[in-house]
Structures are given as C-alpha cells and as structure tokens.
Amino acid sequence: MREKQKQVTPTDLGNHLIGYERLLDFFKEAQQQTPKGIGLKKDSKASGTYVLLQFKLGDKRVAKACSCAFTMDGIANALRKAKQVSEALTKFTSETEFLAWYDTNIIEKTQVKNDLITFVEAIKLVEDSYWNSYTKKRQPRDRNNPSHQSCWYEVYYCFYKFLPMNNTINLTDMMDVVNSKERGSKRFKDCVSAMKRLCEVTDNNKLRDELGKLDVAQTKFKENLQSISLEDFFALREEILDVPENDARSNINTRKQWLFVFSMQVVYGLRISEVFAVQNIDKPYKTKDGVIIAALNDPNNKDMVAVVGKETLLGTTTKTGYRLAVPLIPPTYPDLIEKLEIKSGELPVFNLNSQNPNSIRAYISQRAYRVLIRWTKNSKFTQTHALRHLANLNGMMAGIPLEKRAMSLGHSPTMNDTVYKKRQTTKTTLDLLTQSTNQAIPLQSAVAIAQQFGCTDDKSIKLLAAIYNVSEVEISNVMQIR
Image (cartoon, rainbow, N blue to C red; front, side, top):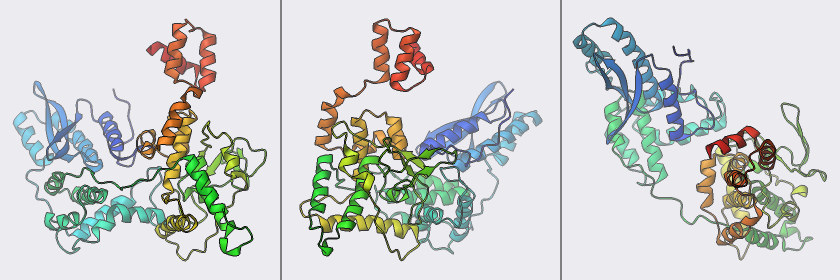
C-alpha cells in the first residue's frame, strides 16, 4: 500500500533544481504518485519526448501513448490520465470497450481542438500560468515585484510581442519570430522554448512537434571571454590609484570606492550587483535566528563572512537571494584581505533616475565598464564578471571543497565545476599545480591510505572526521564502500 502523498504540481519542486534536472525530478515525483499498477515512462522520438502510460491489459503489460509531452504540464496531465485509466480498468470487462474509451478520453482522438484561439488569448494563458507558479526559491510570483516582471518579459514576452496578436495561433507566424534570431544562439533556443509554451497551454501537440524538429543546440557563445590573474588585478589596482591625491580631477575617492567593489568580487566571488547587497560592510548583521555576524570593518573580525541580502541598496533583488559568503583566499596571498583593503572599503554613491531593475543592473555594469576604460591605459580588462571566476579559482587553490565554493558563490556545484573553469589563466593554472602540495588530499584518498595502514578503529575515524569536517558516519560509509 503506497503512502498517501500530496498531489504533485509543476510548482512542487526544490529551489536547488534548474532546467532539465528540475523536469526529471518532477517526473520522478509523478512516478511515485501513480495509482497501483499504473506507471509513467519517458519515450524519446525524433519529433520530441513524450510520456507513456504503463499498465496491465489482459495478460500483458503495455505502454501506450497518452498525448502528453515530456513537459511540466504534460507530466501533470499524464498523472491525471493515469488515475482515469486506473478507474476505467475496474469498470470495463472487454478490452475492446476499454481501448475505445482510451482512444476517446486519453488519446482524445475524437475531440476537436480549438484551433481558433488567437495569439493574444494563448499568451494570456501562458501569463496566467506564470503568475500562478513559484520561483526557484519556492516563492510565489508577485505581479508587483519588478524582478518577477522582468523575468516574465525576458523569458516570454520579449518574443511574444512580435507575434500578430489577433491571428489564430499558427506555425508560420511563430517561425517568423524564431527565424529573426540567429540559429545556434541562446536567443534562438529561448525563443523556440517560448513558442513551445504557447503550444503546451493550448494543447496543440501538432505545432509543438513541428517546433520540436528544430535544432536548438547552442553552438555560438560570447566570444573573447576575458580572464585575469591576481597579479594582473594588483597591477590594475596600482594603475587606477596612481594619481595625485590632492587633484580633484582624479576622483581618488571614487576610484577607491570602485576598487572596493572589484576587490569584493575577487575575495568573495560576488556578482557586481551583489556587492551592493552586502549587509555587514560597516555594521554587524543579526540573522533571523539571532546570530550576530561581525561587520567587515571590525578590526577583530577574523572570519570575514559577508552577508549577501536578497535586496541591494539600489532597490533591485539579487539573483540567488540571501546567502553567506566566505573569503576565498589562495595560499599564494594569505594577506589578500589586507592587500585589497577590504576592512576600510566604501561603496560608490549613485544618483539613479530610474526605478526599473533592468535599467539599474545595466547602469551598474555600464558604469563599471566606463570607469575601467577611463582609468586604465595599459589594461584591456573590462569584464568584471571574470573577477568572480578568479575568486572561484582562488578557492580551488586554497583547497576549499566544490560544494562549499558553490554555496558561497551562489550557484550549483555543476556550474562551479564546468563554466567557472573557462576563464582560467595560465598563471592561475600553474599556481593550482604548484600549490597543490599544500592542499589536503581528497577524503576518499585519505580513507584509502588509512585502510592501507590498518587505521580503521574508532580513533582513526574520529580523527579523519575532525580533519575533513564531516561526520563519523560519513567516514565509516566511505570505508565500507571501499
């Protein structure tokens, strides 16, 4: 007897899952909630991926189509149809009668689709579905939240606005918009995804299948991704500060403020807008559970934990919300915090003319770009996001585990271990290789060595647990696996 579970919906997902990983997790939840004897199976074809219903018919177990695409809504519909099939199997005594019912009610062969729905009506269905869903952080979407409005525009409406609103939904008009994007680009892929969503909310599998034939693999990426080493950043910093302090035209205070922003990216791996969301730059921060986190400018603060809030001082929200970030200090520069003067830093002051979060974010990035161009002569460095990548590499050099680095940077371990290695410079690579002897060896290797020497008693387990900051149970489990 299965334990009764809450009905699964497309919004019942963990905040740590994104994209296809999120879809697979939702499918697994749906599989666990099917009636006894009914299963869901993923079926991939050239035209797309679909959900099949598995059940026993006569003496055989069959897998039959149910007109449900492998999407959030399709999986939810397949689960609903699985319950219908379970009830129908108890009612019909003839396979012929059951199959006739199945064709009508599950495959919907005799049902006439509403092909007269217009684009504006379909877009309204997508919009209603969007505002009734949840964010990746498990928060209900809020129509008054500028960030949620921005997300709706960037994911859907920036493509829908080019459709002829009063036309009935059709492939030709959708393809006109799709073909206006460069094939192989992320915009092309995102546009196709938005058009597929129109098909899903209108149950138009035929149009969705046609869109599914398009090759949306991203083959074109932003060129000339910049990278920078710590030594390059130190040189850049010296060049920016190499001006007469008493010369009003040199804007020395503004220069120091922007260098503080860039240095916070180097030390903590923050996105540039997140620097303006740090809550404890010059005052302690009290968490919801009463823990006091010292101010970064506190002379006695040795941990230097930065509190990234969910909102910035400029009125925008941060990408991943509230989190704690630790300094990522490489062994080559143990005095990095002092060298970059983090404890005495101040943020730049802005006079903003817009309240639009997209405009504010763009303004910060453009302002950072302009000050780097204006204040440097010999450096061609302009992509401040590379400083975030540098921080990750510094953390690798320091031997900080992947999961802890990802937690501090505010993204998934997979992202941390793939995308964030693309900007690795030769100098950083050499530092990683030559400094590797100063790092702790992986836990599995340490356990293997301990077993080779026969050190598997309780004292050895406790020692390894203390060194690697894990539980004794985890050490024991690793030993058993080996």
